[in-house]
Amino acid sequence: DGGITQSPKYLFRKEGQNVTLSCEQNLNHDAMYWYRQDPGQGLRLIYYSQIVNDFQKGDIAEGYSVSREKKESFPLTVTSAQKNPTAFYLCASSIEGTGYTGELFFGEGSRLTVL
Amino acid sequence: ILNVEQSPQSLHVQEGDSTNFTCSFPSSNFYALHWYRWETAKSPEALFVMTLNGDEKKKGRISATLNTKEGYSYLYIKGSQPEDSATYLCAFITSGTYKYIFGTGTRLKVLA
Figure 1 (cartoon, one colour):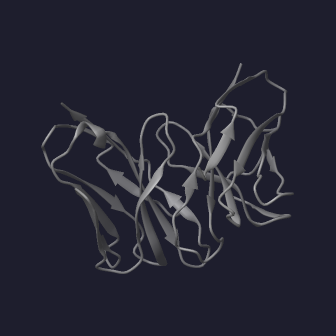
Figure 2 (spheres, rainbow over the protein chains, first blue to last red):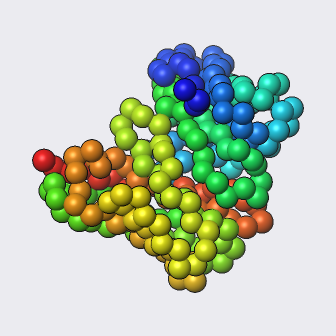
């Protein structure tokens, strides 16, 4: 089945450690996104990529980094510079990027807890 | 700062009841509005993509309307069933930046 796979589902990290969340899609979509969810808040955009080897910062990019070396993969690294990394992270994709009105396709998310 | 508000935050209804939720968004720079259903432990799935003022969309017992001039969209569920229990998200897409701005969602629980 086509879709988006995020791993791991749950991750625990000690303070000061970097951690990478995986996001893979087999939908042949050009655009991919990373969102963060915190209690009582809407999904907030961390980074997005409209095409391979290109990505842009979203609204809350500080302390995060991404890469887009392959069309199907968009990993997110949560660095030790992220002050409050404990959150639920959702990856999404869409057929096209800017200007496209169509739906986003989401993974099931990764919950990161910093101990 | 663009803000998308959803109300109510949560509600419980009895099986068979009809219900509706509201998504309020800025009335300027409208490009599109999405509704998503997000069941626990699953991924959010798109219900509707709405782009024109006055749009009405329907999928089974669920329908949605759009008023871009006043900045709101309603989602209706007719004859709620336990499987409708989920969080319903709306996302507003702005012209210019084309970013998706999500509301906090309405959490629906349908009691059998």
